[in-house]
Structures are given as structure tokens and as C-alpha cells.
Image (cartoon, rainbow, N blue to C red; front, side, top):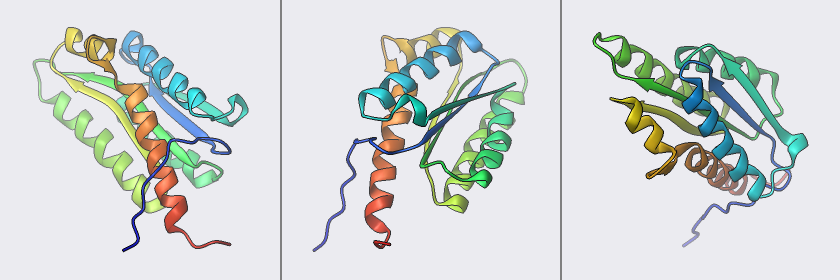
Length: 157
């Protein structure tokens, strides 16, 4: 039986981060974690790109345009959607998650989803470099591993 396992080697991979400015204190920590992860696993500075958008709702639109242009091996979405008193939270979180998932499938590119969907700022801070780690780091590592799996699945040119 053939088994395929992804690796975390990022040498030669081109990575794009798309981050939401809304809740920028949290997003900035997620970006820092994702960037550290990518660099630590071999992605060169020249192969890293960061696109800032207004909020999590806008992430899929900018990501779609970037993927349409090509030249990206993995895309990592980063931001924080914090529940408020209205149903707005559900719409924004759902649009961001489904948009990124759909783009990954349509473009057949590795994606990492580091958009926090939490009830409080404290929960977001705990996941953006606090006691629960950095979900930006985790999203970047997941994208690297998936990129490795996709490379192995594709026939040699």
C-alpha cells in the first residue's frame, strides 16, 4: 500500500499570507507566528508575501485575486472574528471559512485557515501567542504539510 505523508520542508515554496486589519493587534500576532513558522521551515523571505485587507470578510476576495495571478504554493488566511451582540459574527466567520476552503479546492492550492472565531478578546489573545499557542503558526505549518502532500500526489512533469 502506498502511503503519502506530508513534510514541513518549505524550501522552494512560495507562500502568501492574507491578513485582516480589523482586530489588528491579534492579527499582527498571528502574522508574526505564521511568518516565523514559514521561515523556520525553510521558506525564503523572497518567497513570502503579505496582503492586508480590511477584515476577515474580505480575505477570500483578495485571496482569490492572488491565486488567480498564480505563483503561490500555499495561502494562509489570518484574522480574528470576535462574537458581538448581533448575528454579524456568524456571517463573517462563515464567509471567511467557506471562501478559503472553496478557493483551496478550486485552485488546488494548499491553504491554512488561521482566522480565529472566538467569543472574547481574551480567547483571541490566548490563541494569538498566549497560553494556547499561536494559531497563525499552526495554520502555516498545516499549509506547508498540505503543500507537500499535493506535490506528492501530482505526477512528475
